[in-house]
Length: 330
Image 1 (cartoon, rainbow, N blue to C red):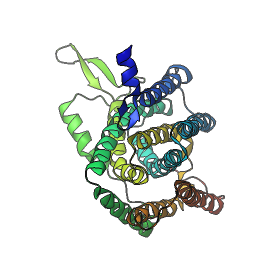
Image 2 (image 1 turned 30 degrees about the vertical axis):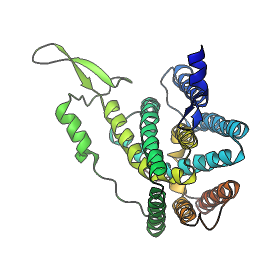
Image 3 (image 1 turned 90 degrees about the vertical axis):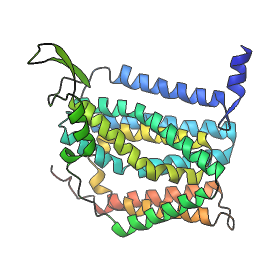
Image 4 (image 1 turned 180 degrees about the vertical axis):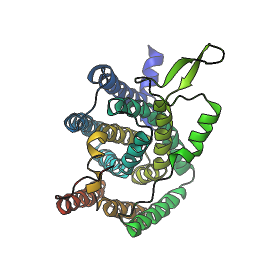
C-alpha cells in the first residue's frame, strides 16, 4: 500500500503519478465505451452521429481542462486549451489524407470507424514517444525551442504563400510502405468483413495461411500519415507549453475528437477555404512569441484568445463565402 501511495504521489515528468493514471483511465473508458457499446455493431456513421460523438469527446476534453484549472491553476489550463485548439486545427489536413487512403482501398463506410478507432491506439503510443523526446530535448538544450520557433515561422510563411492550393496526391500504389508490405507479407485484395487479418487456404499446399486485408494496409498508412503530421503539430504545442502532461493530454483529446468528427468533416472540408490562412497566422504567432519571450511576456489567456480568434475568423469567413458551394463529386 505504501509503494502504491508513493507511486501515485511521485512526480512523473513533473506531474504526480495519479494525474497520469486518472488520464489513462479516462481515455481507456472512453475507448471501451466507443467501440464496445456505441459501435459494437459495425454500421455506417452519418453526419448526425459523427457530430454527436464529437460533441461528447469535445465536452470531455473541455471538462478535463477545467479539472487541470482546478488542480494546476489557470495558466496551465490556458496552455492546455491553446494546445487543444492548435492540435485540432493543424490535424484537419489529416482528414483529407485519411479520406484519400480509405477511398483508395475502397473501405466501406461501415468499416471506416473501425480503422480510425484502432489507429488511435497507435497515436497514443507514437505521440507519447515524440512528446517525451521533444520535451527532454527542450529541457536539456533550451536553444532547441528557438529551432521550433524558426520551424513554425517557416511553416506559417510557406502555408500563407501556398494559400488554398493543394498539392496533388501521390499514387498510393507506388507508396514504398505499401510496396514493402505487399512484397514481404501475404495480402488479399478482398475485404473480409471488418478483419485486419484473415486465414485463407493456400491453393498449392491446402494449408490455412495468414493474410493481411486492405483494412490493415489502410491502418498502416493512416498511422504513418499521423506521424508525418505530428512533425508539425508537436513542435507547435511544445512551443506553447513544455509540460509533458499538458502537451500530451491536449494532443490526445484533440485527436480523439477529430477522429470522431471525421465522417462529418470529410464532407465539409471543401468549404474551409480560408482555414489554411488562419493556421498560417497561428503558426507565425506562436513562432514569433518564442523569439520575443525575453522581451514580451504574453499571458496564457491572451494567447488562447488570439489563437481562438484567428481560427474562428478563418472558419466563419470560409463558411460565409462558400454557403452556396456544393461538395465536389468524386
